[in-house]
Length: 138
Image (cartoon, rainbow, N blue to C red; front, side, top):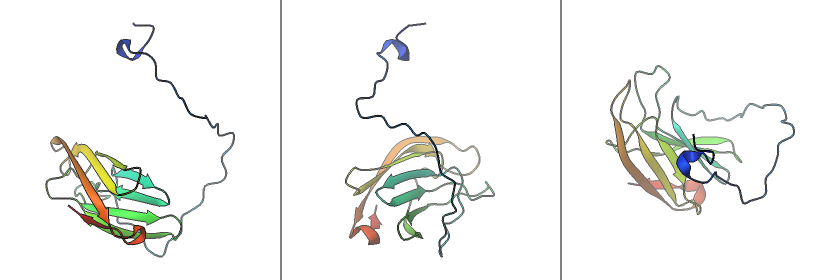
């Protein structure tokens, strides 16, 4: 093999300050008056104090959801903020939020339940409105 690794390319390097976690505290339950929709094998993305959960299987693994849910970690409130387009992947996708928090990106994934076909399509949705009351426009 190539001593430089990564198929002949130079090894990855880190240019920022490295922080080492020496010890973790105890895990805590996130209590919320609202509960998220059941989901497994969904994508997650974060922006500041918000966590987005995109699509996924219902926990019986026979059905999928098109919901995009958001947890506000400051208030502890879950809510559904948008729905995926009918032709977008529902599971096994990658998700990311833009640096300014205005776009949610969805990349590739599987279209439906079971071992359905994958897709190479990518999707983006722009959030409009104030941060706490975001709505999606597809």
